[in-house]
Length: 242
Image (cartoon, rainbow, N blue to C red):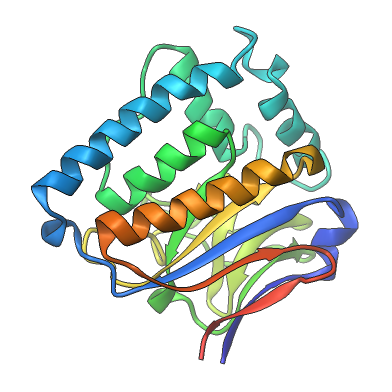
């Protein structure tokens, strides 16, 4: 049995956080997604880029509350210099008039949900995860990590919050940077999709985003939703594979 667990060290620094988890199986590869679905996904992503403007009340990215709340969260743990929450990076592109473009259908869907709801969203190839999938503070640092698009290892820092498994880090600095080892690719079939919220006032948005995300994965990727759950301090783990 394989589990996802948000460890006590996470709740010690972010006790009001909630993590939405969806586990999908047997989703279509990029080549198997119909032309009709690809066109619809492209439209959904374009609409989400436009909708993201509603979250941007200031031209200074850090002054927007959906970003500021993550800046405050990142102050609670050790980070690599310049590391920022993934939603800040997406919204910064929108602010600069550089819309988020297409990557691969599954990634385009989660980027669309992230932009529409201004919540960080990510996805990993669940088949590449070794042992349990965990979120916690890496007290000693040094977990192996090869960032997407890089050729050199960039191990975790002591005191860094990261997603990790038995083989090393999966996503560094909470939701800043994904690694190559577990990244979703065009031929990925099975995935664990993760959405984070650190603002208790936005819990209803998280629920809505999670439901819409699952629906889009079913409709356009043919995915079987085998688990969908909200991880909280009082409910910190779930089974992701039997």
